[in-house]
Length: 207
Image (cartoon, rainbow, N blue to C red):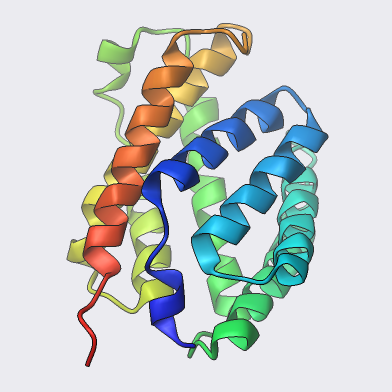
């Protein structure tokens, strides 16, 4: 019980599942999103099969509420993510407030959408490296810091890497969402690096 149950995740599995989830999301392949969400929830949070299924369903429905542009439903997305975080809080006796965690979660979704919609995603990745993603990195950092109860500076490198992966994803979306695009391998590699950095930041020795 407690935080030790959520800090021993496998960065490779988590990065692979999130990579697939992003492909499913932008191609509106909701079955793939659900399968990937199940993989992320079960491998990332130490839940039982039943808890993972319910949690993945909430994540799927939250993403479906968020997906339409510009007429999405952020309130519905936050409520569904509140239910997701409530599962985690109950399962592991975590001292988090699910509503607060959901607000922080959807905050980074919003910052990513701003970055995605206001940036020329057709430019090459070298040019996109100059994009100001500080608000997105800050939002991810705030969520990690709150959920894992660690200083923001400890998790900011992981947040920055995940933002970088999102920018690769945005460029892939602008090119037409080809599921065979070679850039998806690099996206997955950076996601794995992000979760490796996150695990290193949040793991604590016993006692």
